[in-house]
Length: 115
Length: 281
Image 1 (cartoon, each protein chain N blue to C red):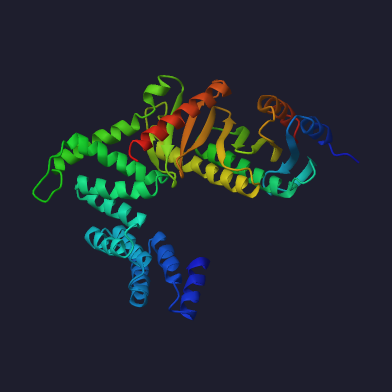
Image 2 (cartoon, rainbow over the protein chains, first blue to last red; image 1 turned 90 degrees about the vertical axis):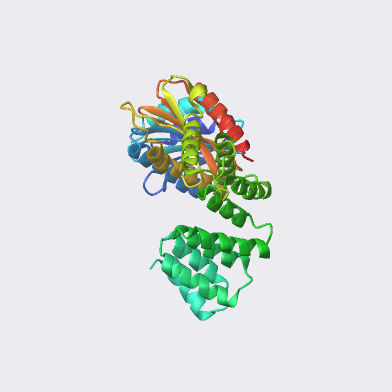
């Protein structure tokens, strides 16, 4: 039986350079559903990305900046993107060559359906 | 008593000659338990009188207790034991700066910067001291310190320069930038609210934690060095990037500003901050 998120994750994993995409619980960092390339440690990505997103959300709220819609971490060898809604976070991890703008737009659109 | 302090205390009790007193003393110092920290450091020094790090620990405890002369003497011992000790040069620079002895402070901070060019706190302190030397124009009292009134005026001027670091670059738009040190404290820039209050310190303290979380993630996932973190909220886009080893520049812009423009401004702010810190190095 496929999860309600399978189609969304399929859309993302097909993008160039994407290594994995997951739907994760923001509070506990546990995977709800994932589509990962071989060798990607999904549990680590889920836990760390959820924690980062949660920290950003809490910090932004404390700083009076409102709720976080989208987060991007750019590092030397890749990206992590996260978009959240209703205590779920859509996470994508990708190589540096991935098309950032297209993935952001896709994730924001897909995050609307997270419930 | 925290678990960490209890563990270190137990370890020291089991082996009183162990160097674990250095970690225990530092943990106590960081918790503000200065009397206990001092006892631990002094007992450690009874067994390790020639350990430079033990004298450095005692010096830092003395600074926290506002005993600047004693701290200076301890760092002097450190330098006799380990002439290249960065912490001692940095600490002596700080004490001399507090005493208004800018030229001597500059010498020690220069020595520290030449041994650790990536430490943004040293670069910032050196930048400030050099600017103050310029503004006090070499004026000195009999004890070699700059006169208090001139010192205060110079410090105010340097602090104002730091507050306005990004002003020209950012112009009048709906965006603001601050430079934060490794502890999340504001080094330069301002963050003004609509009612005219500078809340840079509060914003910096809240948002710098995101950097720590990001570093944890990329370390575990082996993604190399972090280059930026950007998050979009209902009212703003916040972007941050590393500067030197521990500092970061944080740019906040209105949500209507295009993301690409935010990234360009972030890059320019980071370069400006690096240049500003580099003036001191």
